[in-house]
Image (tube, rainbow, N blue to C red; front, side, top):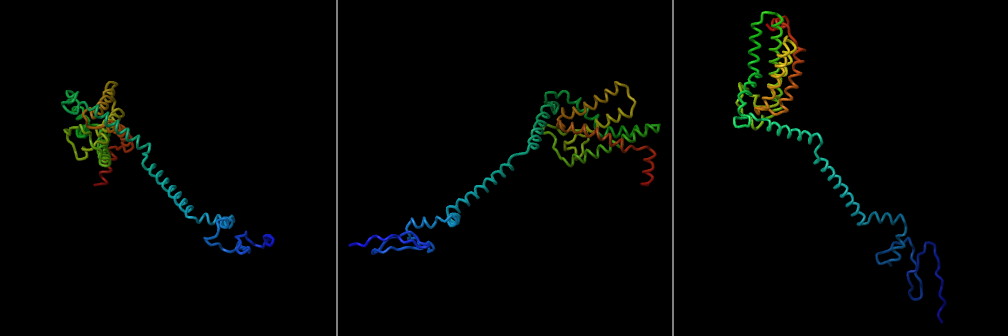
Length: 286
């Protein structure tokens, strides 16, 4: 007669029943490590500890692969954003490029006297005459002659400072041209009167700086009637316009030249010399 079924004893730290062999029940402690051949329900029971589960999950290959992939994706996204920022041009650069394109296009359209075959080629001799009227050599020669022929101290003082202003204009324009080194427009013909090495550069227009400075100087220090004052202003404007019509300069070269010549006159006023001061300086140098 079979023996009655015994109740499952409960031991401290005991584990569920693994099975029976020859009518005997076997128990296994939870603290005993399980091998890979242990039944699945025991492996699941052993992993039910939260701390152990978290540690093992963090050490699992899938978790490591996931973390490495997320790190790689984050770094790749960061590099993509950095490349995007590097490739996106700034607003100032785009604005300057647009203004440069407009300047070149407008200068080419206004160069209607660049050669005899241009649309206004018949006006080219008149534009070249206006060009010579704003050249530095005639102004220096004329000012030196007036300084020599002047018989009054006031006239000599005015002509002396005009001569010094013309020399200052040549020096400043030459320095700016040598630094910027902007080429002249492609449709320009290098047939100008008495050019120098820096004259192959375009920025700024020396004729425009000279016209603006001399115009302000004449209006401020010579007593002229109203029609003559209008003629001085008209001459200065025509000198700047002739530079663009002849294809010598771009529009921005002339505009900057007018601005530069306007402020050069202020510099001449600050460095104003009297004949006595000049004689004292020459005496010290001698």
